[in-house]
Length: 351
Ligand SMILES: Cc1cc2nc3c(=O)[nH]c(=O)nc-3n(C[C@H](O)[C@H](O)[C@H](O)COP(=O)(O)O)c2cc1C
Picture 1 (cartoon, rainbow, N blue to C red):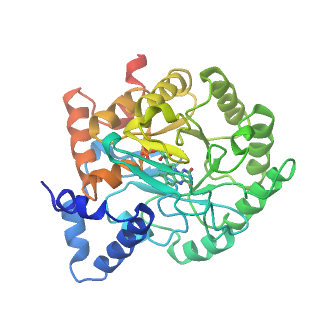
Picture 2 (tube, protein in one colour):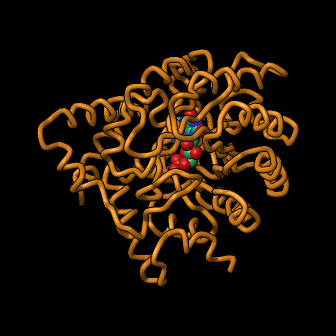
């Protein structure tokens, strides 16, 4: 049993949001120690040529990314990259800083290896994010910026709200994700319609040539999700990120508030991803996220069409050795099936 697993019962006694901030601070402090990078490299990183690939013009040394929401304001980019991620998605940020929903707003469901959150885009805003990232740009691994809508902005003002936030971060970040899928901003998911998505990507394509992604909810009907994704791609999206958390509270025994992530989300997220993968993996870049805890989960999504993956809840339950284990075992799975490189395995189930 690793150190993190031994500490977990203790850590899980503390309020989840408090421990989230504490562990980020602890990681930062650890990195200030001499030789810390050597230790992190040894215990967290894993590099193998079979895992390296180019996606949308960006170079990834491995396919495991940190999902949005973990480091909303990009306060821990260096330390998180030292945990062995191939890329980080920062945010969600909004144009106007927000404090988010009242606490408590993050809950553990240990029996189900899941989390539930109703954070509500607590963040310091797009201008602050740009200031934080500027000195780090260009960074060693790709950095994505996930953009959301302010809670107070409604109706026709939504497009301009996304545009204003995007404009603030155009000089930083290697790609941008439009988040229309958080369940914790009232009516946000209503924007997952063809008309809004068309105007969003038309607007964004006038502003930047960098890769643009759409992040969707797992609770969409598959045919609706497909047509919305097609619309996004037709109007300039470079790829789709599927999925955000689910509002399906039947998946856990004692639901609290907000979207569910982790093992309870796994099947639902994978099911929708499989539909998207079948239809889209040859047409666009696909990123799968939702309940990925081990290399088998990761490999399954790759075979279903994912070029890249993201994790959040898996990191909370498995700890800082997650990336190394995922990448090491993924390289072995690829080799075992005769793939020289991950790109060859993308969508293999449909051939
Ligand atoms: C506490 C928490 C906060 C999150 N915040 C965001 C966010 O700000 N933006 C976003 O796009 N997704 C957010 N997510 C969703 C994750 O990025 C991811 O899509 C989801 O958790 C499924 O992945 P997982 O099962 O690996 O956690 C959040 C998830 C959690 C658990």
